[in-house]
Length: 109
Length: 110
Image (cartoon, rainbow over all chains, first blue to last red; front, side, top):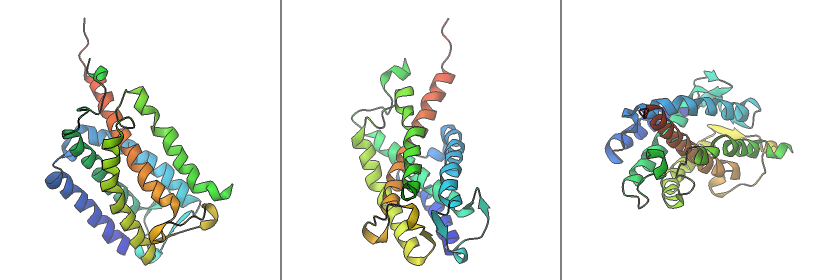
């Protein structure tokens, strides 16, 4: 269950980085918990394609064996770590971005 | 055509998320400096994880459904593209949601 272990470590590291390193703290925003289910839906769809067709296969001894839409449960943790780290870094870089906002000014009107 | 099965899914990510940039007037694809810096930090970490997982047999691939192009660290081309395309889609979704919430929370002017 090495993938299981690494996936849990990945989630913990992503959360620690978000809170203490980038200090973006996206996990404390409502926007994140609004966006995350949308991202999970598309992850299940695309990852279901990869795993359902057997494009990506898993060493059974490295996973728990619980599967959602063909994909191992661990993939959801992997995806969570990837999403959190990416958005957290993106927000950190936005703080000193010369373009200031990630949205054009018209959205604020 | 079977060798494009993985690539097709990456194409779907573009169709499913890139329209958000223009629908909500986002500055993600049109802020390449910030996007590239984000990817320069995030992508290598997950490529490293991928390389370790492949080496340890945590997961493996049906190469008949892939281009067969293998990059450094025995990581297939599709996986490199995965760790570029998925973060872009995630940022677009995040910014799209934030723009959407600004619109729905905006008080109506009389």
